[in-house]
Image (cartoon, rainbow, N blue to C red; front, side):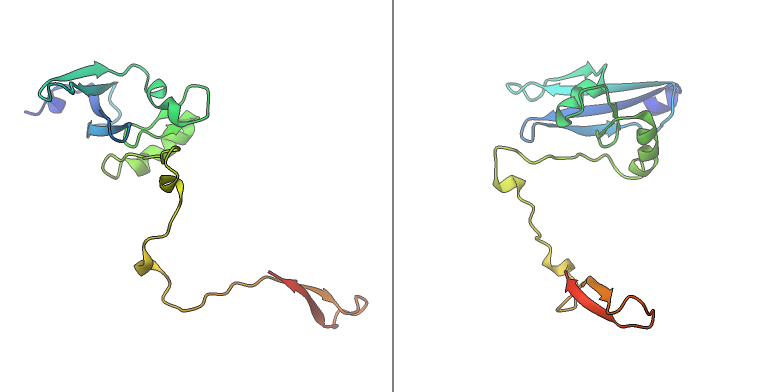
Length: 158
């Protein structure tokens, strides 16, 4: 019988620190949610010996991912995508949508690499099929404001 079936009151998540991206990745997320006790573990590997792995208990997820936000107080962290939220209510609204998908990771661009920080559109096949798409906003005023049937004159457009 799988271990999560034997421990009815415990759910478990396992995170891994990726040295290349300098970020955390969710390696395992418990399929059972809403249990009495939730445990987050961090897997550390030994760079000199790849067969050695160490599991460390994460006591404060907010402190682990707080460097990604300018918010200076405790945060509520989603266990699936590791995204920090300011309030518990916002996290509670986020979890049902996030838990539908496999664990995800938000990767932020590197400030030191200027090419990595530029937003570019690379999916030309997803463009509109029409050759020209024009949106215009016209400003107008009444020629003589005394009568309602007067004509509107264009004063400018954007």
